[in-house]
Image (cartoon, rainbow, N blue to C red; front, top):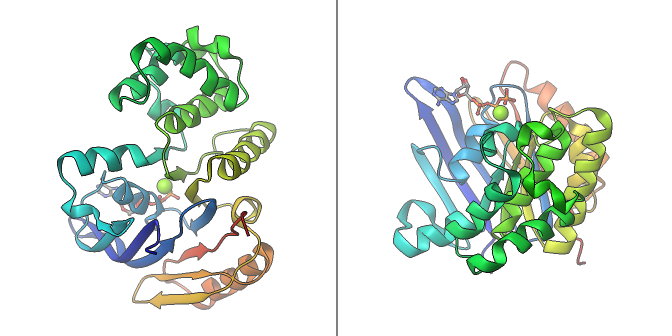
Length: 267
Ligand SMILES: Nc1ncnc2c1ncn2[C@@H]1O[C@H](COP(=O)(O)OP(=O)(O)OP(=O)(O)O)[C@@H](O)[C@H]1O
Ligand SMILES: [Mg+2]
């Protein structure tokens, strides 16, 4: 069976800037979490955007369930736009400040014909409850919520279209410690309940251990001028973190991308 997401030799350039240069990774179908850890400017967000087809790739291939994203057109592209969702670091990027929370979620439901229109208000309330918010928040505007609550709404909106792949780009770094812990708990729970597979972008290794840690079984790596990329499956999350970090230090001035494997909860 082909992996859910397969990135092979991905390169993305912005003019002379090589934002991503020869990155390969695989993500199996969920429940599965894969952490993408690297220093600021190392291209993590660009990889996430390329996966969502929000950044034009200049080399390599991205496959979803075996299909090359670059070849998707019409209905197949529409299906992919539903199957893969992204949650940004700043929830305000995903939420329109002029729209009530309920309308924001219903807009996503309508765009992808997830439920008949007459049921969408109820579904929006259910989704808020699923991410641990008061269903009555549907009538609030984003500025009437805390940052952590807004991030939960952004997650609810991403989940509303029943994605199989979620890209989480620093989903908790704008939050205080308590809100961060709640959102991390939520993501872990949703991974199990919804059998989600996600790519978690962060520079906080502790978060990777928490959300992607666990058993691992395979090692692979690609190294070129500027990138080190690999995935490991086989030992505990914390051991992987320290191994990967020491490899990173060995590489000195090279910009480093750490990709760490996660555990399958259904095993
Ligand atoms: N649209 C763009 N146009 C030009 N350059 C860009 C664009 N987007 C990103 N870059 C450049 O590509 C490189 C990678 O940026 P990216 O945002 O992917 O890094 P990152 O790893 O997500 O960093 P951070 O941890 O700070 O979020 C940087 O040098 C950045 O300036
Ligand atoms: Mg980024």
